[in-house]
Length: 194
Image 1: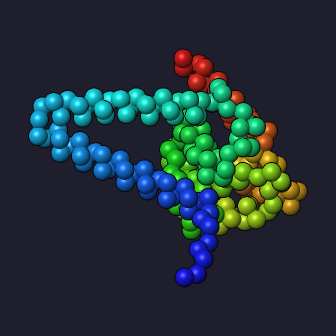
Image 2 (image 1 turned 30 degrees about the horizontal axis):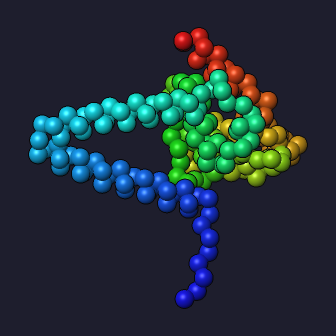
Image 3 (image 1 turned 60 degrees about the vertical axis):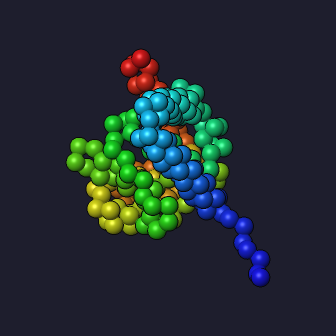
């Protein structure tokens, strides 16, 4: 037998998500079966669902609280966590956000919709400057997803070449400073609502 390649971060993440979903489905079916067989089982199922919903709400509130997140914490995220974070951030800014598939995304990680306008977003969590390749990808995705706008968001900065290409193609670039502003804006919105 040949040796198997180690799993990539993406493959490990997908496997973990499938395992969690499978375990949750099995437990749900078992509880559902028990619930149909007795009133006590039904009450137990309802109580567990309420507790689960509460724990999920608390988990996400703590994990993605915009008042607590710093650029250093963003720098420590992997690319998928950064995408998830930006999805939540744009939702809090009033956008409907669709995550594209993890593979074959055609150059866009997120598709934003607001006021009948669609925007393709390429997300880059980098330690170095982002090159014009990211701009090329989001320009291609703009047509593929039938978007009227395109954005590249990074926790870093952009090369001069990327900036020139973005300007020539009307692509909005959000660098580290712009990201800090977006996080601050959402934090202020959250503070105003509480």
